[in-house]
Amino acid sequence: MKNRSGGVEVKEDRLLEFDPTPAGLIAHPLSKAYKSVWASLRKALLKEHGAVCQVCKHVAEAQRHIHCHEVYAFPNDKAVRLERVVLLCWRCHDATHLERTRRQCGEKYVQEIAAHYRAVDGGLSQKAFEQDLQKTFRRMQAIRKFYGGPGATPPIDYGPYQGRINKFMARKPGETEGEDENDFEIFPDHEFPDDIAMWRDCFRQLAKALMTSSTSLVHLAID
Image (cartoon, rainbow, N blue to C red):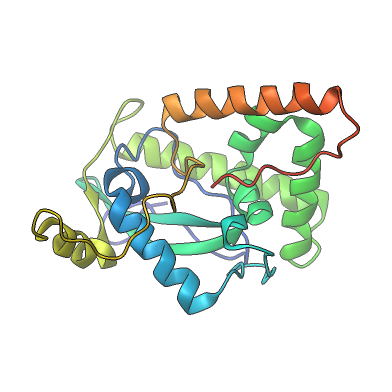
């Protein structure tokens, strides 16, 4: 599990993979620590790639249906590193965070997302899917142990996005970068407990409303 520099390797051998980042390890993800930078980055990615999932190539009807996902590496026990930010459709994003999806959305929806994961990765068998889950769980445990166990929140190296942060921090008061404060990510990626509780309540309210109407259940596209 350790690479030559002492870090924890996260082997990528699937087109769509589960995120092994332990919940709570990333105390200040880019999406939360620098919201204006995040909004600007999201716009740049959507301008470059369009409203297209970079994994399954699904073309979304609207940009708001495309999520941004932070991919972290664990090179040493001093810090975690943000490697890249990728555009994902809501199915791929929910698959990436499958255990969180299970906690929030229930087993029926999880089965739909699991089927999507298997299809994107070339029609995986149920056994291979379960093996992927087990491998991810072991990676997650190794990463958590590597950084000191539960409660650890190592510093974050924002990697290729540090330049954007530096530029933002150097701005003069009132100077803008063209970001729209209404264009933000509201689905917690590397989750904050308060956000999770808030959105769990939203899901419950939505479910109650749908139970009393004839409206079909449509996925709430929150990023």
